[in-house]
Image (cartoon, rainbow, N blue to C red):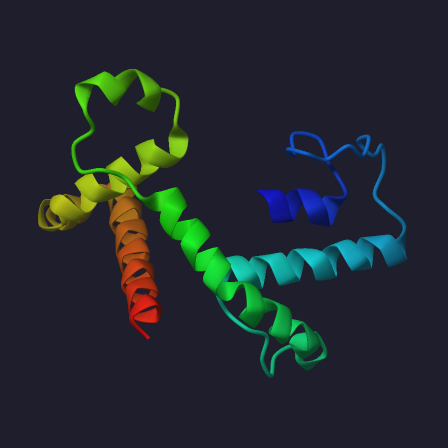
Length: 148
């Protein structure tokens, strides 16, 4: 969402941004700069460096490598959820979409085999199974990165 906002030049709803919202698309050169910044942030968030597909972006790889560990710590902190929250903390959990999504993912992983069976007849559940598989693979890859 942030990358999409940066690419469009729209700063509304972005925290700590004091730039007034733009009424129209930015001119070509600033728009191109915003796209480059968005690409850098996206690759950093995905923990990947630029490669042969976009050789002109490889100059940013030192920045990505320098900040990769910080991004991993940030993502780990962001996604760290207790298995069973304390009842006293329950009121603090209300309205926390990231925690809710993490809990939903945990439920999907715990019931994955049943979801696979149901997905054969329900398209919506099939999408949920696909997303759960993708997130589980990403989590495994992330854990492997932490070990190395």
